[in-house]
Length: 352
Image 1 (cartoon, rainbow, N blue to C red):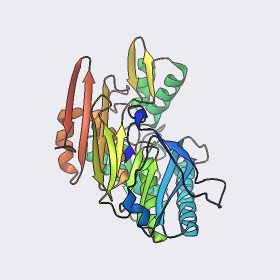
Image 2 (tube, rainbow, N blue to C red):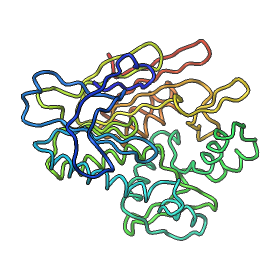
Image 3 (cartoon, rainbow, N blue to C red):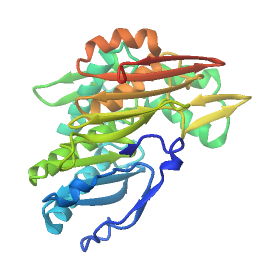
Image 4 (spheres, rainbow, N blue to C red):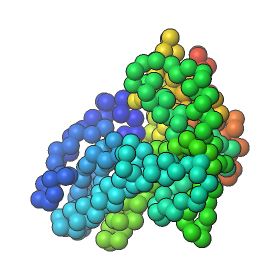
């Protein structure tokens, strides 16, 4: 099973021995102690495919590929190609890189010109725009200006003043991005806009890695993109990948899925503590302020891109509005837990 909460499942800690990879030094197969892990049962010892694990740091997180393949060479080649694809995406879509395509496009905001972009950037922004419209802006890929302010605030331990927040918010708005499908171009209406696809970038990268693995004939695999999961066919002899999910409190559940995307969003790792309050790294697009209440959201979707984005969107919207938005996303399931003071509310369509 895959432990979905690093802090809640330390008692499940295990080390696994994997066949050593003789390929690139950029990734390896070894004794890896992980809290996101996959258990296999004795019946799989007799399966034709062998189990391989590859790991590499990408997009600021560890990316792990668990692959079932017939031989070492196929496993190594397919994993190497998947990692190259993710590296190319990061070079193009990361707002942390000065030379990235997404930052070059943001620099042209407010010029009223149509900006030709790569298929990857066009596609991911188009997906983001669709989710923004269906969630009434609970998810927004134009939050770059306000995200930049919160990154600095979190790093230096101060609270952004009202003027900074107001100025940054004035340069956001998904409805200010226009698309021209025929020329694969976009237009950023206001000067100073800054795109940030961090809310679905890792999920998108995981889905693209799935495509690469399939092109090598790999059928059974899991991509763990820093906690955003893309699941292919289950391990040989199993009905699905067994996954442990948590509410972030005491409640845990084991579920079994394949060929889906799964993502969890919450303030577990990144937050700002200021004057006795904790502010999440998840920013409310309407207020420009990090969420002030504890919320943990797990989403199961047809793909990892959608799961990644909706985990953020439902965290922002909360339970009441989230139930309305879920109607626009067939085949999605949600487990959302809100904690406000001593009051805890839960919305769970995953576990019936």
